[in-house]
Amino acid sequence: MVTLLAPAGSPEAVLAALDAGADAVYVGLKGWSRGGARGELTWEELGWAQRRVCNDGRELQVALNTIPLPHERSRLFQQIPALLDLGMRSLIVNDIGILAILRGRFPTLRLTASIGCGAQTVADVGFFRDLGASAVVLPGTVGPNEVREITAVQGILVEVMVHMVEEFILLGKCWMPSYVHLKPSPLPTDASAGPVPEGAERGLRQTGSMKRGGVGTCFKICQQPWDLYEGDSWREARRFPSRQVSGVADVAGYVEAGAHVLKLQGRSLPPDQLAPVVRRYREALDGVASGSVPADRPTLPAAWTVVGR
Image (cartoon, rainbow, N blue to C red; front, side, top):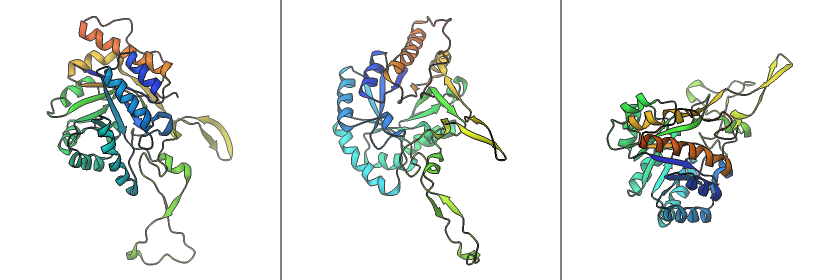
């Protein structure tokens, strides 16, 4: 049976996802989730969500999908026992080193390698299985035929982010937030090159890490308009290219290919926008199971954006 995994960025969104037919819901924990406060739950809200989802016989997953700075890692590991006490067993992580450490310290956890880990091939999925991941998320740009080959890898569940925004950058590997705060540091001195000549400048580099950007949140810089100049003359404002991947027409193909989970992006969506998206994929999955896939609804409306562009 294929699991429909829906996002939720608030308690109200959790209820909307459940009512719309999600088999499982994933949420972010305040301070440790990509996207910041617009898609995170507090500890109190997380406890409520876990009880509510479990009472429905479904599963709640927690995305700890930032890449912690070195001094933050020990604090992250200190959060895990509290999550276990709440009954949480499934975590989504984006840092390969963190995944390996969690597997060693907390063997009962079900760890998912987030889409930000960049897996797209058979070799990638085999790597994450050997590292200790229980599941791996592929982008919706990986089609059913490729998924069929990937699901031949034994010992790991294959999730496909069938509903997502594909940006011009590799999802989950963006350094752009660090450039907002412009806190450069000098490049390290190369002793073999000798001292920097008087009057010369030593190069600078931006600090911060992927996802974190030195500030711990994503400001969706790539979705903001950028001013285009020709010389000193302003020409126009443009956005970086992106497109919505809405794989509702490929649901049958992914099911036949052996995908274990169909995952939807959109923890920033308000409940009234999230519910119809989840419901449409629920209908598609149920249609595949019953053999009555509707032929007149192969796509989602163009207005149904994933992250509110």
